[in-house]
Image (cartoon, helix red, strand yellow):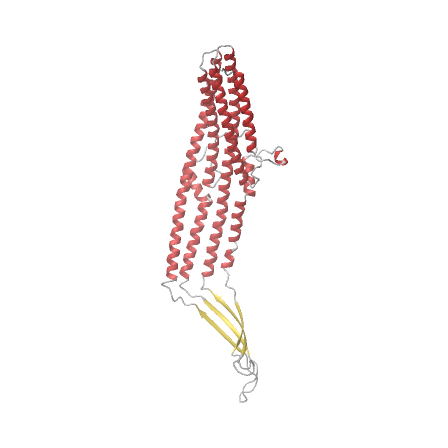
Length: 442
């Protein structure tokens, strides 16, 4: 039985209808407000919304605010102790007048750490609070980088969808030409079938890209603390200008003074040094001072006469560091190791930041060169090739398979152009996050 071209086209239309229906089922139903025309989400707007609303960043900010309240607490004297008591109260009668030493007491005592200890505790807590503030800045940088990367990934997928649509139209044109040539006897049926196969493959790719875009939109919405199913509409055109960036050595120097992660570790080193000094001060004793007033009732013996006098007592205590070898010395050794640990961590992270900068610079320059090559050379040439092949096929001078291959090549090059643009923008974002500074341009 011979399969006609028209029956194949009817099957293709049915396949397209099924694809559209399946794609619609993948989407979660939206509210009436979400179905209304959403405003365009620029990359700057996405960053502003995320920085303002992201709960993870707000959590880090609250953590810093909590730690900022610690220095005053640890730098203040311990709370004094007010004591009430009864001394030498006779158990047979519980009469205050019976014994001369019976007294009702009220006392007050205060502990005084050795001079310098409170200041070092406060200083260490201040360094740690400052480190927490740099952690907030670091998380903000990372959040911005995540948002920018997701935004540009969505932009690439939008352009991929547009590219698929334009190639869809081109393949339909191929099918129409191949069908016409077949109907008048100058073409082959396999040319029509081949074009239909390529169109079906393109439709399958469109389904995959649409699904991937939805997943990326969900992740971007979560970063902005929006409902996952919220519509994300991006502008159709953006600036493709690729600015020149500073030399790597200069970017290194910028990072050393601007990257919050490194400043966080520097503050951690300072906090460790303060705690080491505090451990050394623990060789010296703390003091406690107390005063007690004792009220007595009754009268003295007859040969003394008169009412019993109240008593006033004073006390000074010294905490003796008796177990220095097992306690204080070990604490100093511990704090010394912690200082070394933090210094090594700072050095290691500095090297990693430099490596990230170099990788970002390499990725940017590679994507920049590719973008220029695709924009000025490969894509225009591929388009000219397809047009030339199409004209040649219409007059039977070009094989249909070569025409389809040229179209597939153009499709791949157009996707690579948008990928290069996306990767260049993402590399710039990662470079800014690695340096910790937006001014990375010449």
